[in-house]
Each structure stands twice: as C-alpha cells, then as structure tokens.
Image (tube, rainbow, N blue to C red; front, side, top):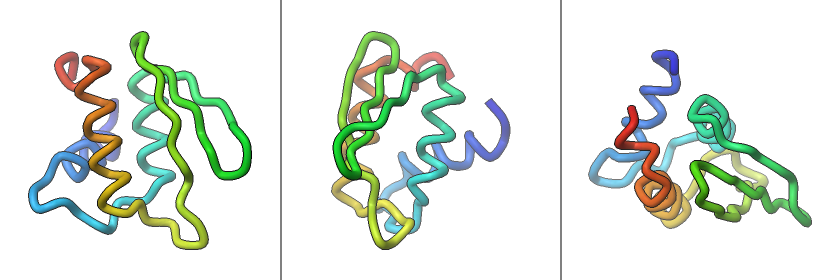
Length: 86
C-alpha cells in the first residue's frame, strides 16, 4: 500500500466524516487491500474483501462519495478485518 492509499484510508476514518473523498480513490484502496471488484447493474459495484461481500453505488454525476456511503465503506473495511492488517 502506497502513501496515496494510506491517505485515502485516513480520510475514510476521519471524524467528522468527510464529504470530499473521491470514489476512484476508494476503489484504488480496495484493490491495494486485495479486493476483487466486479461491475453490477447500473452504477453498482460488488466488492469482495477477505471473505466479506458488499455492494456500493458509484456516485454520479459527482466524483465524491457522500457521507452516508463513506460510513458504509468504513463499516465494510472494519468488518472485513482489513483495517487490522494495515
């Protein structure tokens, strides 16, 4: 994991919750953590990380992830155990 991925991870877990984290950076972080990413219907993205599955919606037309989705990403990372490995 490079410094850009660590910066994204820190942004995800900052309080108060940020509203300026780009979805493309989150996907890059998932890939760096070893996640399998597949396309779903429409803007859905399926993520499989350390035995944990999740489905997220890519934000559109904006590039930034909203606060509610960021909370879900945070919960997914914790539940997958990936944060403990970093």
